Structures are given as C-alpha cells and as structure tokens.
Image 1 (cartoon, rainbow, N blue to C red):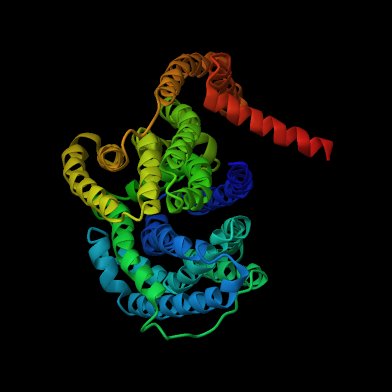
Image 2: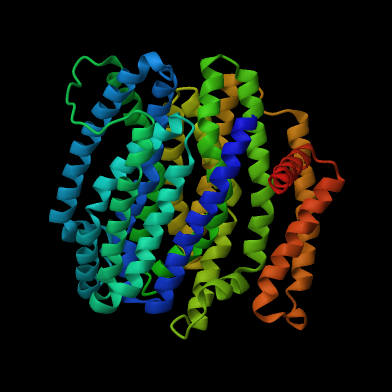
Length: 512
C-alpha cells in the first residue's frame, strides 16, 4: 500500500500539471477565438483523436498489464521484449489503416457526426480532422509504450507526456494560428502526440525494450489471450465513449456556441475527476490485478474501498462547489476577454451544473470497471455500458426540449449513475459484500460535512462579500478547510489516514 500511495502522489502531481495544461489550452483557444464557428469546428474535429486517447490507452493497459506482470523476472527479459514488439507491430498496422481511412473519408465522417452544421462549418471541420487524423497512429503507439511502463510501476514518464502534448498545442496557438488560423492549432495537436510518443522511447529502452518489427503472431498464446481480452474491453470502452459522439450529434442542431459551451463545461468538470480519480485508478489497477492473481479477494476489496473513499471525499465537495458556483467559476476561468461574453458564461455555466451532478457517478463507474478488469471479467462493463448508452439517448431526447444543451449534460450524469448501480449489483453477486460498515459511515460523515460546507459557500458567494479576482479561490479554500476539518474532527478514518500520509511526506521532504 505504501508503494501505491507513493505512486499516487507522484502521479497526482504530474497529472495536475498535465490537466492544467490541457485546461489552459481550452482557455487560450476561447480567449483567441471566442465561442463560434471555428471553435465549434475544432472541438468537433478533435472528437475522434480525443475519444481514441481516452479509450485506447485504457484498453491496452487492461490487457497488457496482467500479462507483463506475470513476466517481471530477469529470465523473462527477452520474452517481454519479443511480446512488446509483436503488440507494437499489430498496433502500428491497425492504427495506420485507421489514420489513412480517416484522412480519406474526413468529409463523410463529418457529414454524419455533424449533420446539422452548415456547409461552410462542415468543410472547416473536415479540413481540421484531416490534419489531426495522423495523431491517431501516435496515440496507438503512446498507449503501448505507457502500458508497458505502467507494468513496471513507471507512471511518471507517461503522465509527463501529456504535459508535452498540451504545451505544443498552446505554443501552436501563438505561432501557427496567427498565420493559418485554427488549422495551426490542429497541427499543434498532431505534433504534440508525435512528440509524446518519441519522448517515451528513452524510458522504454532503460527498461530493456527495443523498437522492432515482429509479425509472428500465429502461435503465440499470450498474443491470443491479449487479443481475446482486448476485443470485449475495447467494446466496453468504445461504448463508454459513444456518449461523446452522441452528444456531438445531438448538440449540432441546437445552434452555434452550444457545442463549445458543452466542451468547456466538461473540461472544468473533468479536471478534478482526471486529477484525483485518474491519479488513483491508474496505479490502483496493477495492485488490484496483483491481489486477484494471489486470490486475495478480501485485500482487493479493502483497496477498492479505500480508493473509492479517497475519491469520494475529494469529489463530493467538488460537485457541490461546481453546482453552487457555476457562473463564478466559468467567469473566473474563461471570461478574460471580450471574446467571451456574458451569454457565453451563462451557456457554459448551465451545462456545467448538470455535468457536475454526475461526478460521483463517473468516479464509481470507472473504479468498478477496473475492478472487473482485474477479475478478468470484461463482459459486465460492456453490458452495463450498453444499457447506459441506450438509456442516455432516451433521457437526452426527453430533456433537450426542457433544458436545451443542459439536458444532454444531465442525461450523461444520470446514465453514469445507472452504469455504476448495474456494476455494483453484479459485482456484489460475484464476490459478495463489497464494503464494510465503516465505509458507509464514512460516506455519511462526508454527506454531513458537505451540507455544512454548502451553507458556507452560499453565504460567501453573496455580492456584499465580493473579493474581486480572489473571490472564487477564497471560497474554494474556505470550503476545503471546512469539509476536511469537519471530517478530521469526526475522526473519519479515510480522511485522517490520507491527511497523515500527506503531512508525513511533506515533513520528510522538509527534513531532507
């Protein structure tokens, strides 16, 4: 558990930096272009590379880590490298085909994905998509490189790669974009993924791996096992990301700015999820898989419970903060120039409220999915995801006439909780009682602390207490102290354990 916590802290720091860079990318894009045709076109075109970046690394990670974890001894060094080269070759071939196909049929893809865009907007979107399609190949390579490094408990380098990618996009915004417009940002996106892949080659070589071409897939049992596991895992993850494509399809007919406002709202909500939830889930999966391999299910459930509680006590107050301070937060992050109007603030804040409601559902869904993968059960996440997507479409269609683009965001949040509930019920049937009484007591303490914190937020957001640019940061800081302080005084085990580890590491750093 100590190694897990250390990996989590390292990954947390780098993930925060990477997500901040990605978030700043959206801030700078809206500062330069505002909300409108070009921004909508970029976000629509970026949908395919972004979705694959969210899907492929997780799918490859889930199938590759259990295999490589079983070959960590020096006697397997040559075999690991051979298997790495075979996986790399297969991914290179597959993603080269996808890249070429996407570039050739970019216009047709856009006509389906954004059928309600006017012809000029569709043309711009297709042009941007052609520029960004090569990034798909390098996303595939990054996925293999990162998964192999994760199997060796190396999380720093893959996480730092996202920083490099994000910095390149921001750099292109001020170098290429003034010359060729939004196409410059698209080129920066592709170049960023290329450099990401190149950057990971050195740490791979240090682990004993070498790049090579190997198409001897035929009678390799471990390649067969990975292939058989990859297909259902990939199907499950694709289903989980169908929300993005369905969202784009549904919002394309609601008028200009609606797509961009959804993307910007989602980027704010995803920041705490990616930073705190992602930083826990990535190093947690190898640990869960290791306990399952040893048939230590009780220990696996303990780790799962702690992982969920750590995230819950960060993301519950985050949810309430995003809902109660929606307009203030959007204005703080995006409304720096006249290009982002009061209408843009209102549209983005409206979507953010409904996305924010679903944060705990997203967190729980992703955690239980990883648990099923560690148990080598890939079917249940696919089933839960398929049911959730179908319900999402129906709920969104019902809510759009009432809530406009906010209905799409709320439908996604509801579907996430449905997915979580289905997986929890099926997981309990498979491994028995999931959590202890102390787990549920901690949830209750968190709800009580969140209620007190919410009243403080409502009181502090009154106009008479406005502190200008410092208003939102001060409220957030006070809210954090109130929530954490109440739980600490209530002697909540999870929060006290987390706080003590944080303070201990901080104190050790000072001593050194």
